[in-house]
Amino acid sequence: MDWPCELTAEFHSIAAFAHWLRLAIQPAYYDFVIGHSLGGLVALEAINRDRELFRQVILVEAFLMSPPPFFRSLFLSPTLGQDERLILDMMERERAHYSPRLRQALRQVDMSRLVASLSTKVQAFYGDRGCGEPHRVERELAWPGELQHRVQVSVVSNAAHFPMIENPRMTTHLLQAILG
Image 1 (cartoon, rainbow, N blue to C red):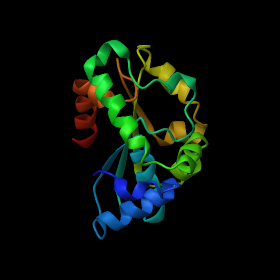
Image 2 (cartoon, rainbow, N blue to C red):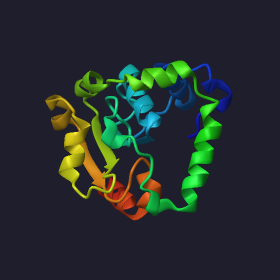
Image 3 (cartoon, rainbow, N blue to C red):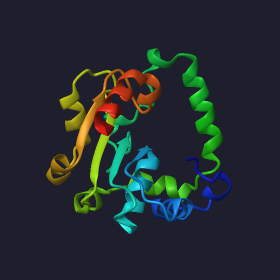
């Protein structure tokens, strides 16, 4: 599902996106949702308002707390080549559709309490930024203890913010393992 670009400039919070999402999919309920980046945060906020909306939330590079410097790379440059330029161009075009207030709110995000309070199964994928050490990726998240025990983290090797593009085979394998 794509965001309604004609409306998003007026969405100044994750909650505004979640409100739109709930209206767009009502009255349906789903076995799972996969949300990349902001999409994952929106799914969590939507389920906060309606705990039955999704039975499982799968986050892909969605940061529950503002990401530390380790995660601030979008790509592993040798991985993408020409696709990197296409993605950067797309992101630049989309930037006009996002409010500066939203960008500021995302820099200060902390959804740890929300996630800790959910009974919904939450899983997360993060790229390893080329470090090859899944435990380092988990440490770098710097999550409080309740999140470490609440969210199962999977690490996609040789990927950064776009694991589904940089390492589609591993991302697909992990998703198939989760979804059966």
